[in-house]
Every structure is written in structure tokens, then in C-alpha cells.
Length: 78
Image (cartoon, rainbow, N blue to C red; front, side, top):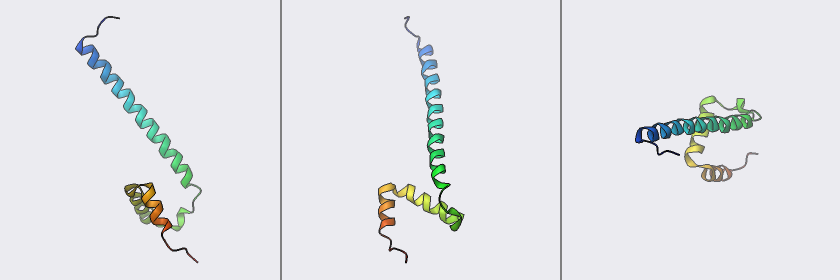
């Protein structure tokens, strides 16, 4: 195989970078779709949209172990 010129190598790397970017976005959408599917079974209509958004944002910001730990520490409802 002939050695690639710097321009050819750059073009190849840029094409691979675009392809990887597309793969990342496709996978990100698949993961998000999966989680949306989990939410459809929950009674979300009981929460205000603003509260739900804040809850999810804080849970994501804290990370799963911290968020789950904080929720488990809450007192049980009667």
C-alpha cells in the first residue's frame, strides 16, 4: 500500500472523525430513547414539569450513587 501524503492522511482522519461523531450521536439518541421508554410507565403527571426537570437535573449533576443515597435517606411516606 502506498504511503499517504499528509493531505490524504488528514482527509482520512477528518472523515473518520465525522463518522465517529455520527456514531456517538446515534448511540446517545438510542440511550436516551431507552430511558424515555422507562419514564412512560411512571405516573409523571403527578409532578409539575418544572419539578420533574429540576429533579432529573439534580440527580444527573450529583451522579447516580449520590442521588439514590439521598432519596433512600428520605423518610417514608405514610
